Amino acid sequence: MRHFIYFSSSATTSGKALSKYADGGLMKAGRMDIAIHSFIQAVYLSNDFRKDVVFHFIFYGMPDPPKHIQIKVTDNLGLNKKDVGKIIQKILYKYRSGEKNEVFEKCFIEKKSFMKVVEELINEKNEIFILDKNGEDLRKTKIPKNCVFVVGDHEGLPKKEIKRLNKNYLIKKVSIGDKIYFASQTIAVVNNELDYRNI
Ligand SMILES: C[S@@+](CC[C@H](N)C(=O)[O-])C[C@H]1O[C@@H](n2cnc3c(N)ncnc32)[C@H](O)[C@@H]1O
Image (cartoon, rainbow, N blue to C red; front, side):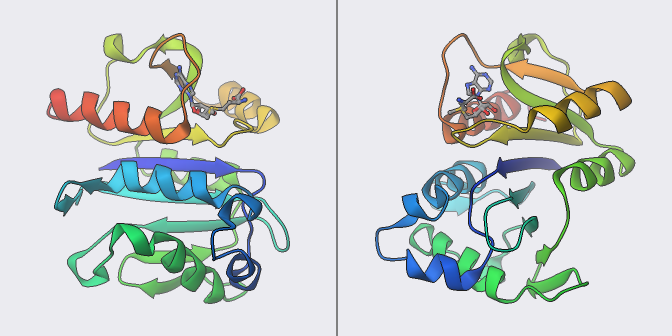
């Protein structure tokens, strides 16, 4: 399985807060626009979606951080690209304290930190790759089937947590080139590289 983790230090963590910005104000909801673009690049193909991708949003914005939203798109979700913001909003509304709530089939919300989400994926035998301009060339990197790619929002990834992960686990930083790309662009490149290699 391919996993993508999208980390945002500012994306809003309540459905009510997101609904305030729904009409064209997603930039004010902690750059929810970047989160949505990243999700679209991770999961959609033209006229289809990727059944081998699990997408994780980790939001640290106000009013109730952190929130982990996990989505594996299924036929039943009937998700249209235009609806992604609405789906995130509905899932945020359905957060239940102390639970990992399955809001739609294979779509969950829970209170869980970035570190915990990554550690759980490591324990499930996935290899972690941090997307970083200064990392090893993606094209030269060996990638197993069970892989997790971690990407930051416009403010990047949390330095303290990345340092801790590097200290405690075998984590690789991978780069798609010398330019700084949008989070969504890096995800599109990774998906294409994995498709090319038939991973
Ligand atoms: C717009 S960039 C963030 C820029 C932010 N100012 C920083 O310094 O990290 C969004 C994310 O895309 C990924 N990214 C951007 N350019 C990349 C590159 N050349 N190689 C690998 N990942 C990249 C990183 O994960 C980054 O956190």
